[in-house]
Amino acid sequence: PPPPGASASPPWTASSAQAGGEPALLAVGRAGGGFVPVPPGVVTLLVQLDPPERIGPFLLRAGDAARVRILEEATGAGAPVRTWRLERGDEAVGRAFPPPETLPGREP
Picture 1 (cartoon, rainbow, N blue to C red):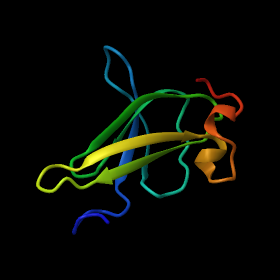
Picture 2: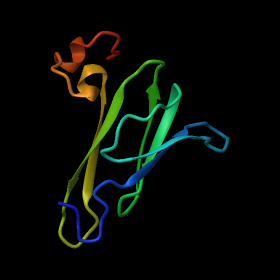
Picture 3: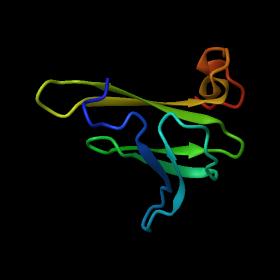
Picture 4: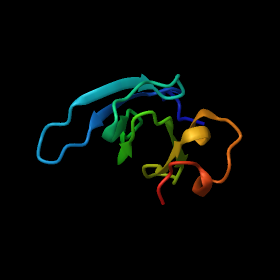
């Protein structure tokens, strides 16, 4: 469970991941909310957790359905250990799906 006072659905922002330039804001949303359209390209997410979590960069293609899952493990006195996973296609929208390596259009 989240620590006391933590938001159960923290806000996030998606920005373009441009080398050598200012990233452009692409979309905003809340964790656990509905799908939000994000333009295709190389994207970085910033999730307002404590401390904030930067995820990516990763490539979104036109027509992709994608979801990011963040797993957090308490470590005692220090900051939590977090891992994240990008889910695509049927895996992202919660349908029954084949193993990820057999999803159509997925690159290894």
